[in-house]
Length: 287
Image 1 (cartoon, rainbow, N blue to C red):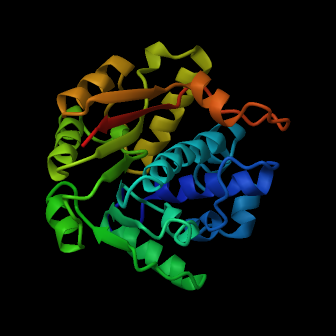
Image 2 (cartoon, one colour):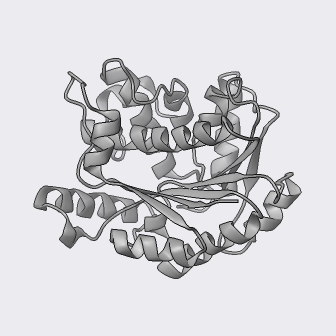
């Protein structure tokens, strides 16, 4: 990410979620009517895909990936919130809109959006421009992950270590070292005394993917590096499971493309389907 600027990847991911409403048919995997406005791209740029990688991020496979990974996390949060008061911590929150779309339905969820200051400033500005207030149960927390302890920032924002908590880590694991990922996973379980979950996506090594998918990952990684956000880590399922169990999680559920298609894309008639790259894991440490 370029210093002083919002994450371009966050903007592109928002545009991809917005494209799902603009280009696909109901039933929608995720209805994110705020995404286009938060992305900051003009209607003409969104329509033509003329900026950066907009055309690629709005392609059917990528917009399916960006929408369904958010849907999976939100389903986990809703499942937990139906059972108990809950905290939801979004690491690398970017332009996520959960708190602004579902605040009335899930008022009992305390949301903590954690990201770099430049992206948080952009988000506040774009929300103000469209007249959307930050709900009382939501805190936007500015953290420099390389120099600051997120635990301190969460504590100052009202995080309660005794409450059940879901942590999400979408679009982050490929940008940090394995050592940093191990450290982050371990710190989530030590931060919460009771029920704790971490849900994340990860990118598998290119040599484990079909040729077309491997080439797509190489292209995305190259473009991301050109934006100052290089990919540095890739994981097999076995490696992800090892990191999460070493961190103290007891149960680890794997979401691979066939499972994701079965849960969220069966019966669609518009051809929208997630590709072969998306992998997600749900790790649980029960109370």
